[in-house]
Every structure is written in structure tokens, then in C-alpha cells.
Image 1 (cartoon, helix red, strand yellow):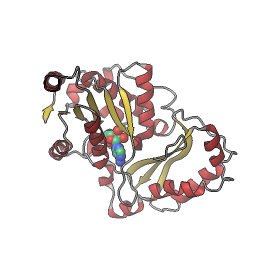
Image 2 (tube, rainbow, N blue to C red):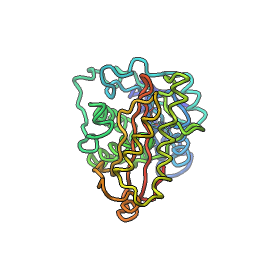
Image 3 (cartoon, protein in one colour):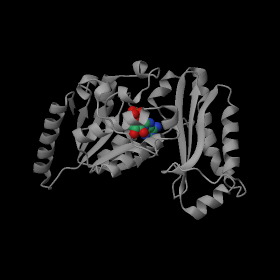
Image 4 (cartoon, rainbow, N blue to C red):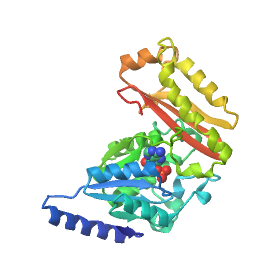
Amino acid sequence: MNVCTTITQFRSALKQLQQEKIQHSGAAEATVGFVPTMGYLHAGHGSLLARARRECEIVVLSIFVNPLQFAVGEDLTIYPRDEQRDLAVAAEYGVDLVFMPTVAEMYPAGATSLTTVHVTQVTEKLCGASRPGHFAGVATVVSKLFHIVQPDKAYFGLKDAQQVAVIEQMVGDLNFPVQIVACPTVREADGLALSSRNVYLSAEERAAAPVIARTLAEVDDWLEDTSLTFADLQDRLEAAIHAQPLATVDYIECLQYPSFADLPQDLSCAEWLAQSGRRVLIAAAVKFGKTRLIDNRLLGGGHRV
Ligand code: AMP
């Protein structure tokens, strides 16, 4: 496994590896699978790496805590980091190349004098509304990483379903020659979605946090009642999370996916899902103490993630 910290180093290491693979296999090309992360790797990241390993000849992992996607007052300075452990995990998953740049390498002129990428519409609600500037930071760094790595496939987790929609929109609009692969959310045994931020939780908060996943899972039972409208669903979701005293709701919303268009509030959820063939995202952002966790369920269109 080769670890590169500069763009020049990375590009030449990737080129060399591609030539070696082509010579070895006799194939015309060696496909590159890319998993962008902010590090502090867990089994959620691992699932993306494992899928990339199965589907591509070369697997590239990037580890970069991107300051551009954090607003002032968010957790940039305390974001958990453990490079040595991450490299050991990457090696276990059979990663070929790790790109681990410094902030100065990615933003040599500083983050303020930068050309940035703004995706409209799909960034307006949910995390786009509660974290202004977040998705411009994400779209900008992912654009840069796509230009640096030039992957055939890039793997993203549906735990960040809005992020997947933003990246797919950007890739379509700007003609990036990359296939986006959206992967299911990996969870702890009690349902809590794996997140690097889970380490912030106190023992009490950790015990309370599965309320989000538990509530999202209960939706299946609720949908058995065909008279349940989207307005009823919204009320039940809010009531279930509010019942946990340690939880402070940032948002819990049901929207069409991936357009984020509103849903007809007075119609039956089950009937609308069956008849429209469209997908519904139920997305939640909930704070436990200072820790903001997100999770979601995707319904309809054959998806139950
Ligand atoms: P992060 O390091 O948090 O920026 O995440 C890097 C990638 O891993 C993103 O595509 C995330 O959506 C994905 N990811 C994070 N947590 C999970 C999870 N629990 N299951 C699946 N993918 C995840």
C-alpha cells in the first residue's frame, strides 16, 4: 500500500500502478475505485472499501478532514483523527493507494480565495438548511478529489443520503466521467448508524442515541396502516424522538428523493408510495449533548435501506 501526501506524488504513483496492472493482466485498462473519507475509519467506511475492492482493479482511499465543509463553531478542530490506525485498517481492506493531503496541499492559496462548486436545489433543505455552506464545501472538495484521482467509480454511503444526491447532481451537471455507487448504511447491533462522531457521545448519550434508528425502523409497521398520511407520519416521527429526553431535534423530515420536493401531506403514505413508484427519504438530524448525529431511511422504488 502506497501512502501519498502530495498531488504530484499521488498522480505518479497511480500512473505507475495502472501501468503495472495493465502489464500484468494484459487488459486494456485498470479501473480505479475511489472512496473519499475524513478518516477515523469504521466498518461503514470499510463497507465502501470492500465493495470497491470487489469491483475495481485499483482501490484509492482519501483521508482529508476538509475545513471548507465545516462552519465556524462546528467540530473541525476536535474532529477525531488517528492516521496510524486508519492506515492499518486501509491495508486490511486491500487498499492500493492512500491520498492523505495536508490542508495547504489542497488549498495552497487558503480556502477563501478559491473557485467553489455550488449545487442548487438539492442543497436547500435538511443539512443544506441547517449547515449553510456545508454542501458547497463538500462539492468543492469532491470535485478537486475527482480531478486528482480520476476514478471510474466512486463509493459513497447512503447514511449521508443528501450528500449522495448532491454528488450525483454535480457529476451529471458537470459531466464528470465517474459512476457514483451508493452503498447501504452500516449499523451497530442496536441500530445506531456508525459514524466517526459517535466517539463524542457520553455513555448516557450513547445509550439514548439508537432512538433515531429505532424510530426509523418502526416506520415499516406504521405503513401497514394504509390510512396513515404523510402528515400523520411526520407527527409520529417527531413524537417518538421527542420522547427521548436527551435528544434535541435539529430536523426530522419526509421528502421525495432525490428531488427533495415536498410530499402531499393529506395522502396515504402507503398508497402514494405504491402508485407513484417514487422514493421517500425520511431524514433526521438529532443532537445528543453537543453531538449532532444524522440518519435516514429510504422508502419506495424497491429501496428499504
Ligand atoms: P466521512 O468520513 O464521515 O466523511 O464518510 C466517508 C464516506 O463514508 C461517506 O460516503 C459516508 O456516507 C460513508 N459512511 C459514513 N458512515 C457510514 C455508515 N455508517 N455506513 C455506510 N457508509 C458510511
